[in-house]
Image (cartoon, rainbow, N blue to C red):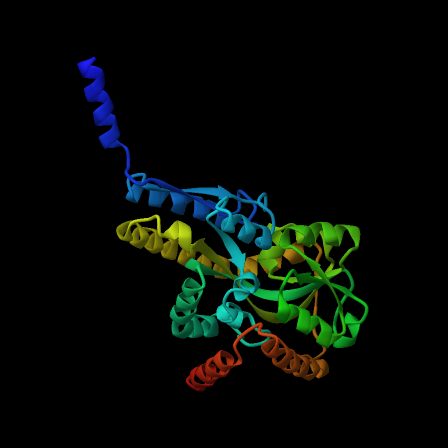
Length: 329
């Protein structure tokens, strides 16, 4: 009996104290490189914290869309998730400032403005109850459709995917004369398949990962804007971690998301080639119509800013920063 008691006490001391399992939902399909990187990050954190912090992932949208994940976080069923910028903007409008249409032109510009504004946006989200672990690029979005779109007039009558709750995209679709159909990300494939929608915006890599490329025939070869996704943990769950473990978790996720970012940029051209090899046709935007798109964009930004989709003052500062940067290039 004495030996059993000693063994039991020894076992108790060997177990991690204050062990926390963080349940994270994502729409990323299991088996993708991004999901593999996230699982590896979770394992590394578990090892570095000696089992005090574990991650359990729910990939492929099994926990529902972003709105469903947010609801489940509020009742404690989930503790965090991978979210679109539009969803995070509901908490803190500047969370999607980088994704405003036609704002950023290339990776160098993205890297520069992020070096200036990331800390401010991360802090803003944390004040709103979401602790960001990382922000990773999705590349640049393109208009993908079942009929070619070369001019703004070609959008008339088209049924465009409207991400649920995204005020910015809603304003843009109205401005260019399309019909927005609100859907969660996980419902877009079925929407394209059934004809509920015939046009959607995403990156070439995203179209491949989500299998949308099987339901579209054309890509308008003109980037609409920068895409990014957030990994964030709710403040209530975050506070269960010790300060030392919080530091470890943030450090590992920053490294993981930097790697996801690098891999996504490196594979951008390959994704375009892959779409072309699958028979998807890239059609150019008519040069004489570009000004019409840009004018519509400015009107969209005014409407979306007035609706609270982003902070207009932040856009002014970001554009000023871009002008200074571009002057040096």
